[in-house]
Length: 129
Image (cartoon, rainbow, N blue to C red; front, side, top):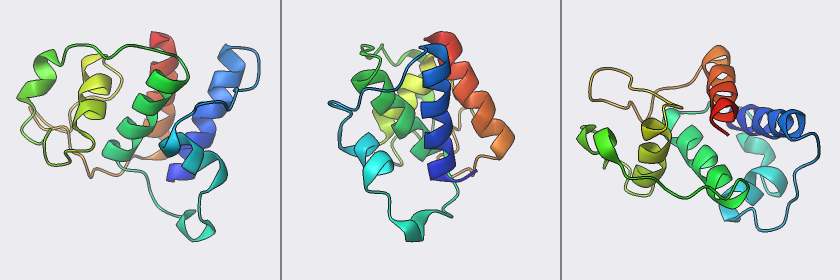
């Protein structure tokens, strides 16, 4: 699954669950990038768990207005600080049970997400909404 396909599925599922189009006010830079500024040369980039976590976290904060939760067990992940920009996003999706470990105590930041995994993640995300 590509980054853009993941983002598009997220928007599509949002429209189904909330029975309307996403309001694009205050999406934040990261989500606006996928919506309006995504470069054509990046269309084939496969999505990794850390990018999925960032997209979902931005969506939680900017669209659904969720507050961040305490990290809890996410703080024990051995690779949580391998991407300092992503660490809170990873903790938020991990703690909420949206994206799990690649192996015990390892999130697997650079693990490429398959189409099935990406679809499962998006559906799990909206089950929590």
